[in-house]
Structure formats: structure tokens, C-alpha cells
Image (cartoon, rainbow, N blue to C red):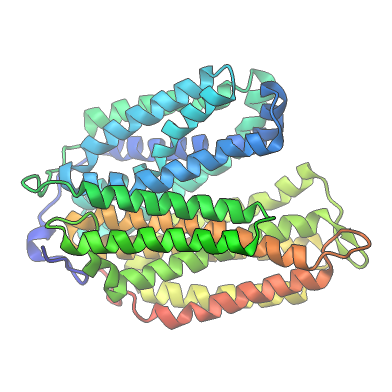
Length: 472
């Protein structure tokens, strides 16, 4: 099986089925509802602890379970979508997510809620499946724009989830933070079923690479669990070494199996191609930088040190972080247009340079609220542009039959980069704690911002491997 990582073959540029605005609207509404369902837990976590009678560590399992399931399901869903058709697999996935949402909304205790969250984690696979449908149903020149819109709506759902979680939980009950978005998901899925054209399956004559599926899933689970354990702190170096060894062993076994498989889960030549590995490296960098800022800026809002920090409360911090969330949504909306006009390489290069400049500026100037708000919003906008460019570039650089697996791997890699970035940020702040006050010193924040800027600069070394051409 040969994979193409330049322009798709002429046979793949067939005229897509004509789809109407209601079908696109349903796909967008589905992305919005899924993004909402993904983020409602964090704002309501204190209330869930109280209502379920659990401690903070147990409540943290709710969000962790969803992330781990998502890391497993996304590549499998992408591969199945490539093989059996994006619409068919998306409908099956939404049945799982809807079941998980309903189970979560009716959960009487934490164990049942965790089962519901496990099923809900399948929602992460919806993005690559949506990209399959977009590529098969849109002309080549409009694919990047549509991918940007779908990504933006998923991000917008995160804002909606953050805003509605409190009012729903306090005004009705915590059960409604899961029930309300699930109802929208069910309705949007019904419209997709009715209006979205069926996309043709491919490669049904070959057996699915189940050993590859199992080993990739095991590797991702080990990696995600390892990152979460290390992030929790207090892990001795020997245990960290053991985690690294387990992940490396599973990864090596997966590579060995894929090299011998007739129809591998992931074609290794695709991963080795510059267009793919460069997008993966940049995705890790962008996600890590975003997670670092998501740690540093709220903490700087919260602390009240001598000559630095704002001493703000949770409500004010949430308000001042909102412009960054809005900027991320806007970036996804216009990112596709930027890629269509200028190409992914230009967008990523400009974005990396701008990100480094913003981080250096905030390292020097962080004395007032407006400086932090503007810097975080600008960084979120630029990061959103780069993320959209990478997704759009990857979705159109690989052969059409590999759109799902390629983009799903980027989705998982973004999760991994975010966890790693958060860990690095936490370690920098912990290392800079003032023993007397227990508050991170100002130098710790400056070091963190500069470290993130260095990461942005280093990412420029791989940008040149991205797809260069601009779609007409």
C-alpha cells in the first residue's frame, strides 16, 4: 500500500457530492455540542466533589478518564472512518457518546459517572471523522476553510461549556451539565444521519490490523497515564524511568508489528514523511506552549507577591481569561482562509515568530492586568492559526483514504503536548517557590515565559518541512 504525502492523486479529486447548508450546520452544531460536553466538568468540579462526597483526587479522575479514552479512541475512529466511511463510523461513535452522556446525567455515584465519562471520551474521535466528511464533500479549494470552521466550533463549545456549567449545576442540578449538551448531540446526529451523504468506504477487502490497534492503544494509555502520574508530582526518578521504559517497549513492539502487517493500522512511511512528522512536532510545541501559558497567566493573576501578581479571585480570573478563549475560536474560523490563501508553511512560520515575540514581551511586561490579557489573547489567536494550519495541511497532504488516521494522530499528539506543557510549567513554578511565602517568585514566571519563547523559536527548524503549495 502506497501513501501519498504531496498533492492527492487526480482520482481523489472527484467532484464531491453536493451538500446543503443544513447538513453543514448539523456537523457544526455537533462539534459545538461535543466541545461543550468536553469542558463542563472543570468549572463544576468543586460542586461535584460536594454532591458526590469525594475528594479532589477522585474528582480529577473524571477529566482524566475522558482524556485517556479520547487518546485511545481517536486513532481507531480515524482508521475505521478511512476504511468504512466517515459518516457510518461517526454515527456509531455518537451512539457511544450519547449513551455516555445520558449515563453521566443519571449517575448516582462516582463509579457510574466514570463509566459514563469513559464512553463520552469517544467524542475526541469525532474531529477526524468530521474532517473525512469535509474532505469528501467539499471542493479541494474549500476544504481548509471548512476544517477551520469545524475546529473553531469545537473550540467554541469549550467556551459554552465553561459558561453554562455553573448556571446549569446551580440552577437545576449537576446532572444537567451532562444532559443538556447530550440532547443537542442526539438532535444534531439525527440531522447528520438524514442530510449528510454517505461517503464510500475503502479497503474493506483487507483485515483490520488488530494487533496494531491493541499495541497502539496500549502505548497511548501508558503514555497518558505516565504523564498524568508524573504531573501529579512526588514520583521518584526510578519510577519515572520505569514509565519511560514501558512506553518505549510498547512503542517499539507496535513499530515491529506495523512493519510486518499487510494492512497496518498506521503506515509507518506516512509518519516518516516530512509533511507528517513536522506537523506532529509543531503540534506538540503549540499545545505545550498553550498549556504553559494556561498555567502561568492565571497563576500570575492569582498570586500577590512583592511588586508582581494581581491577587485576583477565581471569578475575575475567569473573566480575564475569556478574551483568549474567544481569540482561539476566531483563529479557527479564519485559519482555514489563511491556509487557503498563503499556505500552511507561511502561516506556521509567521505564527511561530509572532508567538516568540509575544512571549518575550510578556516576560518583560507583566505588571498590569491588561498586559496579561492582551498577551494571552494574542498568543491564543496565533496558536489557533497554527493549529488550524497543521490540521488543514495534514488533511489535504495525505491520500484521501488516510485523512482520518492522519488527523486523528494529530489530535492525540495535541493532547499529549498539552499534558507535557502543563507538567513543565508546574515544575518551573514549583522550582521557583519562595520558601518563606510559598508563592512562586517573579523570576519563575519570567523563566517560564522565556522557555516557552525558546520552544517557539526551535519550532521554526521544522516548519520548512510543511507542505508549501497554496491550494487554488
